[in-house]
Length: 162
Image 1 (cartoon, rainbow, N blue to C red):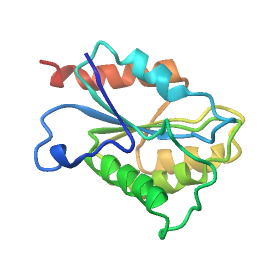
Image 2: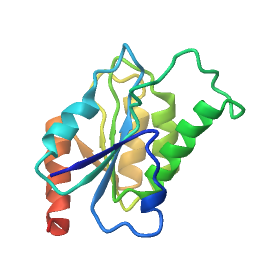
Image 3: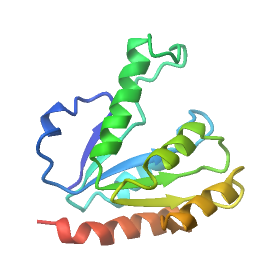
């Protein structure tokens, strides 16, 4: 059974010893625009022994100033960066209804350093060409759909299953 860890749950118990397969759900969140694709991936991985880091925060407040001086905003960004660094796999989805500039930033930051990244960037995403070229250049796995991405993750998780 998958374990879901959502922001801002403390990651401290896991920092020194991470015995399980883990997946960070990177990608479009833009509330009101992006579908809640993270929930779909969680359901698809429910029967695995994966730990799923989900940054989609239930108590997100749109009035928070996006500044390093805002403790709530800083907590969110620090949580995401720490979980990204801990993940076995980064699964990244670019919803065509969004811009997702932070997801583009994360693709650039982690595309060459994460052990495994899987990107799903459907037709219609405004920077699909850029995403496709980066993925091709750095041998980042691409999925044509969320279902295909889920199946790739399940396949990668198999050796880790107890």
